[in-house]
Length: 193
Image 1: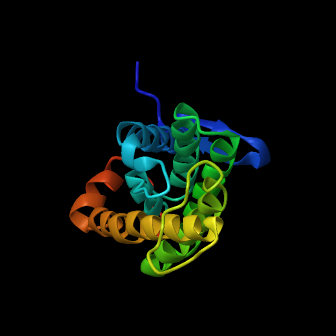
Image 2: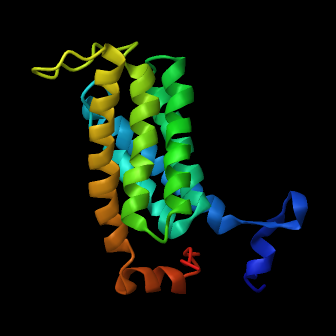
């Protein structure tokens, strides 16, 4: 018996497009990886001053496309649901990741700009509700309303995770000696065209 061909592992979906099992697998892999990083690094993944290291996966949407957008969204939902702090976090955290990853994917021709702009929705969305659950950080010399202080704190941490760590990870994984073997094994890489 011969192994199944590539067309045999595709399933038709609405509109005649094919749902590729490799894209589904990539989505599941990144959802799991994101959720695991959130759970394992929970002490620094939550709170008014945080560094959600899992957010460094979001810029990979510029390289691998919509499977990463879906993966980091689902992974955020799973991680936030595991460390339940409220329905706002479980709903709006994944929306922030969906927005950030989509922005980075759409700006993939200008990766650094995409990562910086993509980090901002996380800061504004998550910071916009997180002050309801945690006292905001105190900025010496500034008297900021709680929600603004939280937006500033989360935006700074998001810029570090997405625009510094994530952008660096994206550049490393984009190197030909890393990406070519992945492509040779059938992994679809988003082209800049």
